Image (cartoon, rainbow, N blue to C red):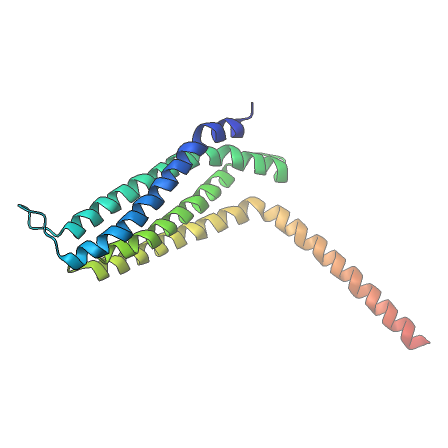
Amino acid sequence: MGELADAVREHLVPATLNAIGLIIVIVVVQLVVPPLASLGTIVPGIGVPVNMVLTVVGVVLALYFAYGVLKHVKPIITPAADLVSMALLGRREEDLHTATYNLVLAAIVLVVAVLLSPLMVSIPGAGAVLSLLVLLVGIGFGGLLLVKAATGFYEVFRDKLEELAENLAERVEELERRASETEEAEESE
């Protein structure tokens, strides 16, 4: 069997289950924490609001599930990148693994930041600041990873892109030449 097929068989189900777990944790915390915050319930003996405890537990669980997704997606990326590299370039490119991994990591970071940011609002005192901080750090880090991924893809496919641009330029020149010949023929009549 192929390396990609084996990786998909082994890691797709756990990656999907972790993604579902991440979504469930975020949805449950989003549905449960706001009503508890409005009640102002305090954990007896500790003096900490219940909504804060649930938010912290939700964030930890969300990060755990996000890590699980990443852990199980990474082994699929390498053989998938090899397959694409062989199909498009005729050779394996290590830089394609890195670029693809950076792209997937950026997507996960951005999704987690966008999903976790609203959870932070329910933390008393600094919730709004933490929410904004999580969002800004996630967008900043995700953006840097996207730039690294784009640079990596460009480096890997530069020759193919330049070849494509040259072919396109030659076709445009041919069209311009035909248009010029047609124009000259009409003027001479």
